[in-house]
Amino acid sequence: MTTLYITVGDRSQLREDTLQFIQRAEADELDEHDERAVLQFGTYDDLVDSLTPLRLELIQAIAQERPTSMREAARLVDRDVSDVHADLKHLEVLGILELKEGGPSGAIQPVVPFDRIEMQIDYPLLEDVDADSTPASAD
Image 1 (cartoon, rainbow, N blue to C red):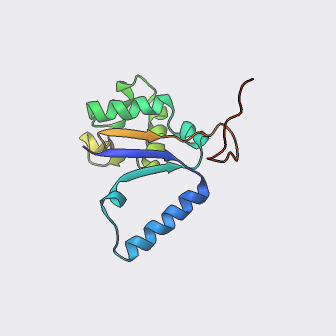
Image 2 (image 1 turned 135 degrees about the vertical axis):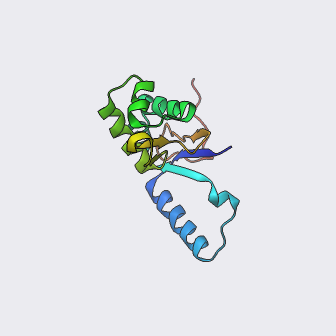
Image 3 (image 1 turned 90 degrees about the vertical axis):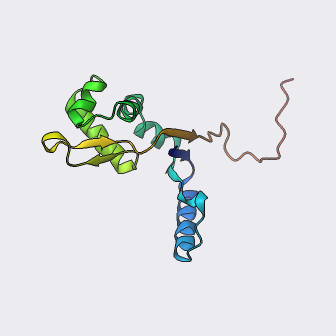
């Protein structure tokens, strides 16, 4: 089973993780954990803007039904072809799906190379809270 892991983290941590990954790759020190497909958004808002309910429905329909063209994908979700085309291009840039040439009559075929998506969202409710702090009582 191929899983896409989606996380939300701060941009400075994303930058640091990327630099460490590059250093390990250059030193040929990557392990199987490093080969996982991971998509990290800088903020929760970035995640919500990119993975709307309509886009998630589109991803699932493509994974289940394997349409041979963008037009067929649009029919699966009962949406306008131009809107689906824009969503597919956005999802391709994110790496969630691939757009392959060579479908019937030269059509572009959307392909989701994952069987599942797992999301981990850390959504702090308070800013700058110490991990060791005790919550205030509700007296």
